[in-house]
Length: 180
Image 1 (cartoon, rainbow, N blue to C red):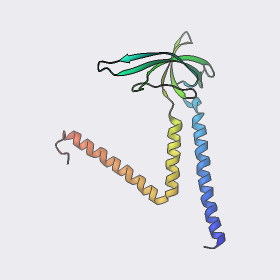
Image 2 (spheres, one colour):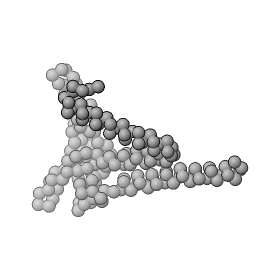
Image 3 (cartoon, rainbow, N blue to C red):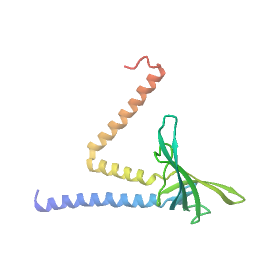
Image 4 (cartoon, rainbow, N blue to C red):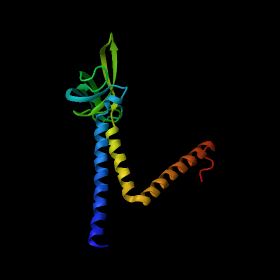
């Protein structure tokens, strides 16, 4: 290639990469601010205060700590939008079956009302769509970069997953007698 052809080739590559990055950033920004689309109340943790910490010992002499948190949560959608509520959370230090919440996290809420006033609020789960969007953008970017090789790899992954689930289903139906 001549110098002009090389430059055009690199300009196209740079424009493609910048386009993917900008679209990815736009998608992440949108998803980070999409609370208005949810029927479920969404909140952002504004402050965290540790209330107590107690030792727990089980039958096998395993030691864990139970920690109580008081969270100030700003509601991001619905009729209660911009209202700050207090939510109590209890978690174990091991976080095996529960979560420790931190300032800035976005959470899904369950609000119990009495006479149109919020009586209690509990966190049902973290709002995990931002990390998922980042992952999807990265996969799409890699597929675009890898062109047909990436598409073949994705199709192979999908086909292998389908075949795996079919094999598991056959195994379950035959009660394990036809594993091979």
